[in-house]
Length: 68
Image 1: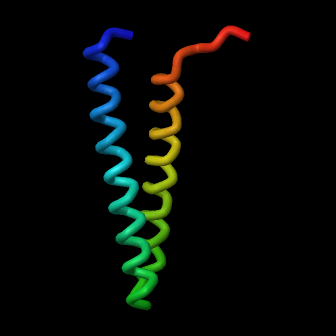
Image 2 (image 1 turned 135 degrees about the vertical axis):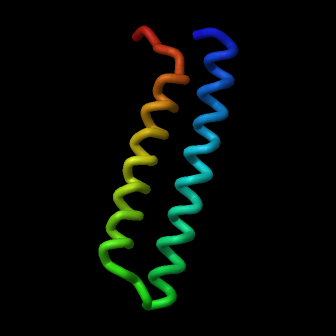
């Protein structure tokens, strides 16, 4: 992986982490307001899980392979 590719992945990873935090805040706000639309809440949680999986895959691709 070239340095440019790695920097691009790191930038995208930062964006995904920020979106994940924003969704977490939005879910918490909906729950605390007791005005939670269950369908919307489910969609937000699903998107948050998708982001978590995406973040994990990107972090794995950034780690070097270790030969045991």
